[in-house]
Image 1 (cartoon, helix red, strand yellow):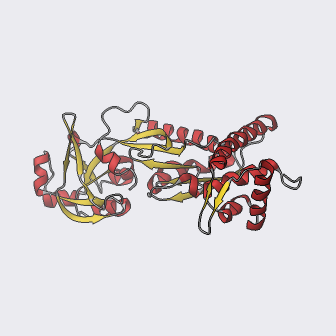
Image 2 (cartoon, one colour):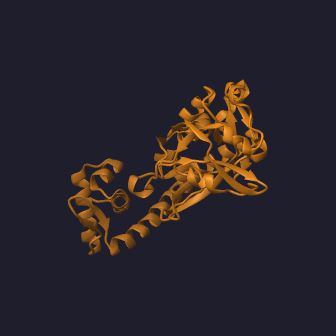
Image 3 (tube, rainbow, N blue to C red):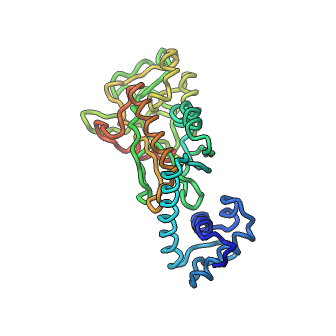
Length: 325
């Protein structure tokens, strides 16, 4: 490879092309013109004497040699970054791209973020907010924060907490419909249904009775696809809902919502941080993960949630079904 091309920078660019499946997006990530990125990869292939990438008009993918080289590049780059940080004393820097569940972000991530960014002033954080499935590698996302039981075996999942759930309604609704005290009373109740983005169906209410799960769907008053809309509808007296308790802290304190059927609470909902198996964690990702674990540990202790590593009781179907909603 010619002297004009730094080999480590070429490796970094190559890994981004593989992950983004695009020269254009990879070039944007590393701050190069696309034409320069294309020439760098050509020089890299010429230097190695192998074809690293298969190119079509719409798609870029690694060859078998390219995939093997990609994995070695990840290890080399991670080792270099860690070594430089250890000997220079420099703090992690650069862009950190994370994707979070919006409600979790507002309650658990954003409040402590000023302190994190003050500690690591050279980090630039991009937070995507969504519930959909994310292809971390292809979309250039470093890690995601999700509720529900992780379904993707290609990801490393770090359990952060188990969020206690409950069944809630407004005092006005209970005055009009009566407070349910047994599950049989649900025959005369109405619920606000949450529609799963994965199945398109309303997720039933879940209750744990003597260690076993019972799923029930009372008559629907309204079906929604937004947790915020569901909570607002409940405060307006439209029906019963099931959500994690932390989501309703203000409403419960104000008395605009109250818990019912507390003896039959649904199973707790896991919260996990996911990142790819195939990638070595860069220093900036590692410090973010460590910080996020500490944030959840603090909130768990303060709010009385179930800790991620010592959750008691079963985790049943409801948590799995809402994993990406």
